[in-house]
Length: 395
Image 1 (tube, rainbow, N blue to C red):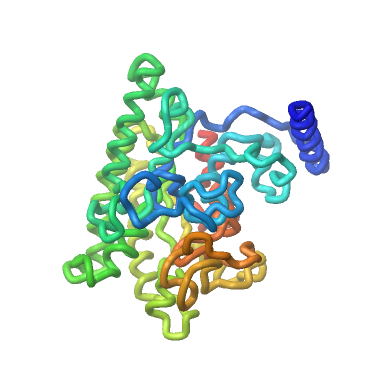
Image 2: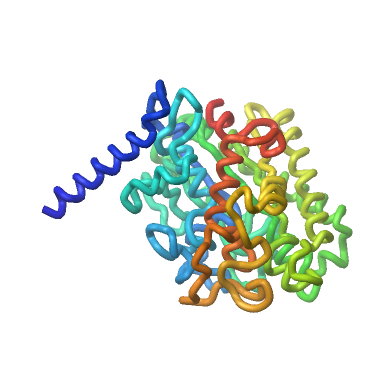
């Protein structure tokens, strides 16, 4: 009986989904994935559980993290989905060929489906086994950076260099599964790779002079050059091991996070411009790196996502996006709820969609959805460069 009810619920859910989308006349649904796999590199903005089993203070595998995620706390530093989760939906769930839009881009629709039905999970490297690597792997780690020492005050973390070593291991597995290196290379060339590093190299390195010496050794311009030089080598390694369609996500406005506002903003509202200016120096160089790679690496298709600019829109016009609180975390402790992250079993704010920030550092799911949508299908010419993720997937 329970099994029959479950089947009936799925059928009814699909019927409702189709009925609400019926106004899209002439739209033809496709169930075929846009790309065969999706690989994720990054930090706590997209970590989905890789830090759970390591000795680190940077963990989020407890409530209230995951309060709105179907599987509860998983290690995601968010109340719900990360941008990587939303990207995964765009690449692997239903798409509509006449508009180029994915059904998940219309927020209310997926809530008609049973929990766990809509989520296209890209599994964390820590728990991925066997054939599952063929759909993609998430290597991201909270506190990780381009530089190996970044985040060391928080304990263990998986730096970009280590994430690349883990990826090489995955490539070896794919070669074994598909039978030879040529087949693996052809397969990987069709996949999407997203890489979002650099935030911690500022937050948990350059702007932490009591622990790190980088701000004494380098001006902001010099530090941006040093980071990009190392990042370029790392991305070339990624290319060497099969990546061709690569999304480089710029550093966001760290100077506007509740943590930095609590420490450095005189009124708790004005963003810390010296931090944001340094972030922009990195982003300018990262965007130029896209041109360099596309020109000099055969078959390379790199794009840049302007996360900084998208977030600027949310800060300047919060009410138009439904946000009310822009300078404090939905949960946390101290000024701006920014002195530390969410405490275990802390009761967060009730209206989470009205907050830009979930905790001292990380956006809410509502923000992640907006950033992911505009990265996937650019709303303005400044959102992505030179094309958006949707067009990248079609190449």
